Image (cartoon, rainbow, N blue to C red; front, top):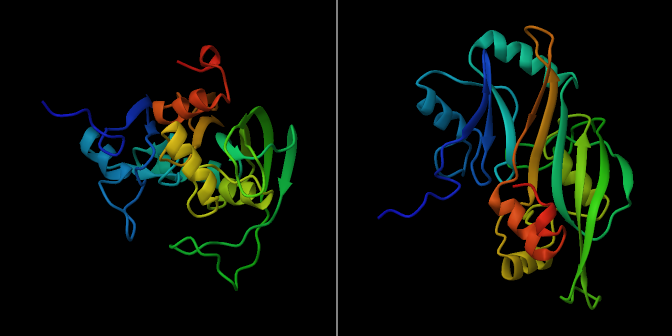
Length: 248
């Protein structure tokens, strides 16, 4: 009997559909085919699943799970892309980070554009970028790190006002609270602690919610992505949240 499919093999879950659709993206699946990416990207999976063309509106990093919007025709893509590009979509993320950030914090730190390999373009002008952070819970674990006898972690909710590439990850690194599992902006020691003690081998960043106005009829639209098991389980086993308080 074939084993259950891995996150990178599963078909995306479509949670809303009209002239556009919203899918739940698993961690480890790229949205588009890029140089060096392996496996079938989300865009192609959706096209195969629906039997029609699907048009990208925005993106999530390969390691990020959660809600993502695609359009079913070019006009929907144009209108939805305008909403994202002009800050008309409220994006809410959850992340597990190193250390204990302030209870509430505004991160106002302009960012340079990145090239296809995620490297900042030296000659690019820094673009405005603001993210709002709320600390939800903290935990202190009995694992020595660097010069400290224990290690501290926090679960945070963060809302980027813009959509700069890697904005959430770069902003959390900027305030010295990088995301666990982030191999580009994080800390290897803390990534190993979560891998070895809590079974986490992914970027602990989840696109929890999207709020926007439907560009066709003007009605408010909110889409919430359930916590996948590979995000929820490390939060539970590390003690960041009691099991009884976790989403199903």
